[in-house]
Length: 60
Ligand SMILES: [Zn+2]
Image (tube, rainbow, N blue to C red; front, side, top):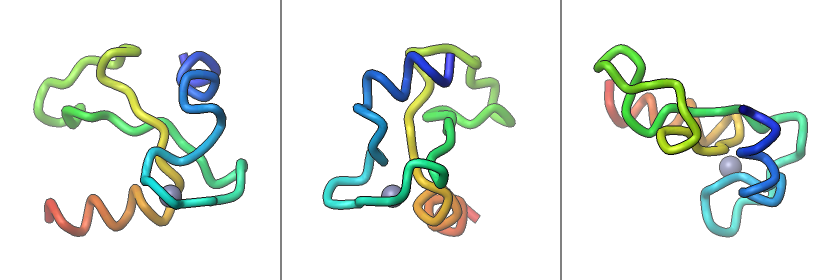
């Protein structure tokens, strides 16, 4: 699944203008897993580690 998402995102972080290194990228749940979000392509997005943490900070 991660591979398919990476291809769709062209191996780039989803945040516009972000040029995070490839090895920082990770699959994030659009709808958080803790809130019942499924682990699926439709609910997945590619974010780099800093952006993912930043988003988590916003929610928390
Ligand atoms: Zn990023």
